[in-house]
Length: 72
Image (cartoon, rainbow, N blue to C red; front, top):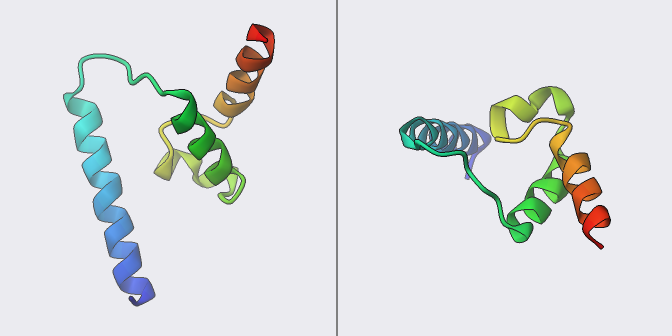
């Protein structure tokens, strides 16, 4: 797959995600496995690009970590 095809596929998935979020009437609740996935991918993505691909803000993974450690 060429870089152009990959970029097009990523844009399609991003747009689909945006459309689905607009249709939801409630706030999305992530499970711990989802949070782990976002945290792992966030280390590979520069922070200034998070708003394009992630539904979480740069402060969200540290907040999740604080909540996890406080619960234990």
